[in-house]
Image (cartoon, rainbow, N blue to C red; front, side, top):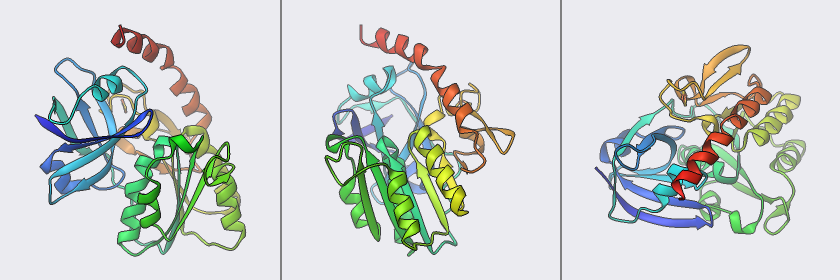
Length: 273
Ligand code: FES
C-alpha cells in the first residue's frame, strides 16, 4: 500500500499529492509516469511524476479533477493508502547535450513541465520557462519555475497575471529578440502543443512534445493513446510519451481525444451519484 503523506490544493481543480513509494523515487526521471489505482476494482490511471525525493522515498503527483477517478482520488486524505502505484514508466526526457532550451507549459501540463525545467537547471543547462494559464486563479508552481530557470515568462489569457496573451506570443518574441534554443519542449493542451510546434518549425528549432494528455490506461493495451508521428503509428504510453513535435499529426490526436468525452462524462455522473 502506498501512503499519502501530503495533499495540497494548488488551484480550485488541481491538487498536489506526495506518496510514499521509495522504489519509484529511487529511479524516477522527468517525463516518466506512474499508474495508480485508488482501490481494488478502481480504474487504472496514468499520472506523470511531478517531482521525487530520493532521500525521503516520496513521489509527487499533480492531477486535475477531470473525471471519475481523479474525483475519487481527491476524496482521499493524508494517511490514506492507494491500492496500486506502479512505475516509473515511459521514457525519461532526454536532457543531456543541450546548452539552452525553452520549456513551454500550459495549464496543468505545467506540472509535467516543472521536473523537466528543474532537471535542466540542475545540470547547468540554460532554461527559459514559458508558462500559460487562463487566469490568475489557475496558476500553479510559479515560484518553483522561477527558482529553477534562468528566465520565467508567465502568460495569461485574460491578463490577470503576467503578460496577456498566448505562450506562442512569448516564445515568438524571445526567438525574434535573438534567443537561440537548441530545443523547445512543450507540454500542455494538444492545441497549444500544435501551435508551438508550428511556430518552431518556421524557425527550424527542434521541438519535443509530450503526449501524456492522450494516455488512458498507460499500459499499451487500450489503444487510446495511438497517434501518427511522421506517418507511422505510435503509442504515447509505450513509444513516448515524448515525440518530435514537427512530425505529430495533432489534428488526428485532437479528434481521437474527443471520442472519449461522452464515456468519461457517463463515468463521472456514476461516480458523483
Ligand atoms: Fe492505453 Fe497507451 S494509454 S495504449
